[in-house]
Length: 154
Image (cartoon, rainbow, N blue to C red; front, side, top):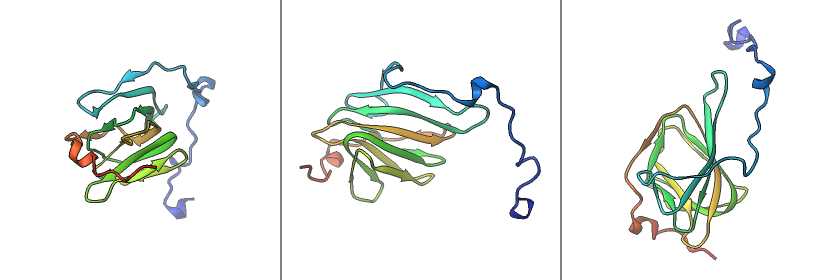
């Protein structure tokens, strides 16, 4: 391993207690809170936010967007991964067309990529949002005119 650039310290397993080894957040067990109006347009519910333990940088939450709801433009310093679990929605990177995403799709955004995501105009969407670290830079809201450019939905 050292030949591959790992140090002896990198190869040491962290000492974890039994309680640290596995944590389960059951579906429906978390309290839903409204997405902040400064960061979202429309009805958005954020449930079961979580973060890694023992120095892990991962964090995330389950986010439900009602039809027409969406995030503001934003940037994650270390990128973001979205796993769509229910419904269909839209996502857009700055300078690119709006893309349709549906249950089972995974969206991976590079660090520093300006983007937004949310429901389609006619259906709700739920995703699990994952990112590393705490660095989210919230920017301007997606205008109704920008949102109206979404792809036609069946």
